[in-house]
Image 1 (cartoon, rainbow, N blue to C red):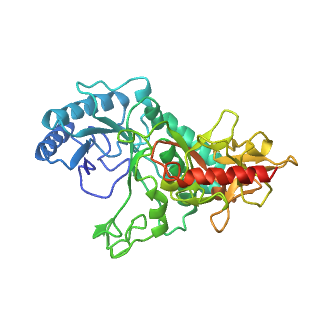
Image 2 (spheres, one colour):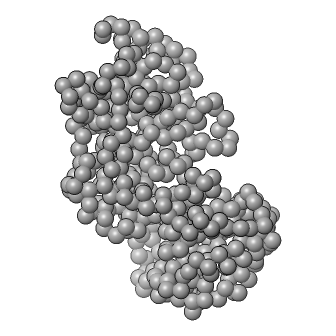
Image 3 (cartoon, helix red, strand yellow):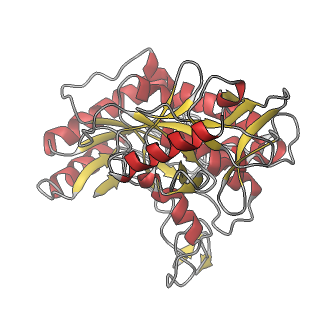
Length: 409
């Protein structure tokens, strides 16, 4: 599927506040010429079925940007596209480098058509400068996500489609700012079930900013485009490439996945005799999170228990003790914490063998040098068909689990 994106008017590397391409009326941004261009492109691709949308303008910005002109021209552009090609989605970007759509909360966009309006936003680590390096990751994640929800994420809660049309990281894996941001970003993308486009595929450029053959370290491909630059990154985002819920997913009542953003995997059980581990989200059981803060396999009495610090978490059939209650703690709300019988707190964690264990909760606040990502988990609503809960083996596993629970009493 292809989305046509009107990026810049004056060719060049994008973007800056002073490049003359930023907002309607800038040196290289004539609104009338822009409307003409939208009309020609919408007409050219009318009937081309794999062209599914048109994004009106990339990263509006600069000293001239203002809300009134945004409505004036974006509405005009949207109506122009619809008139020339009624089949494509119409995608509107915000202000301040496509970071701010907050003004729509109190002033909805009014168009003559319905059912095909999408909003887009961009979100990188550098959107917040060096905050991920200089601050505690839990606190920064909580603050940044709160800001994203205020400026664009609220649209999802209002029922609008929100498309993260640019995100990405330095795929060499050495950029701490990017690495910390990515785990936080993936939890939001999973929780809100966002659609997204990754910057970028290319491994290098013919010519960029005066340099011939410049390498693109955010590129999926390496410099000569012969290999994937970072296979583990593709593994991490693969679980987000299919929707968790929405049209076409008709399986019963929604359930929870326990998503681990550092790996892109989910908590699964291979059998009752083996510990919980990480695996593909498609193999996850359906989990529920009760008002009593019990994490249980949906439709059963079996829940996750913290046995001891440093030990694997286990499934039990008696879920009334404090060590079967899991609080979402820290500013990020990504730590699942339980209290042991001796009163100490532990958090779900992952060991070197991808086994789910419980360890002392780490990096909860202040320390900017600490990395909490192995202990970050997100409870994600899903309606995907679950392999384990629909197989006959799940009934056998439940019987074995009941035996294990009774034998431990």
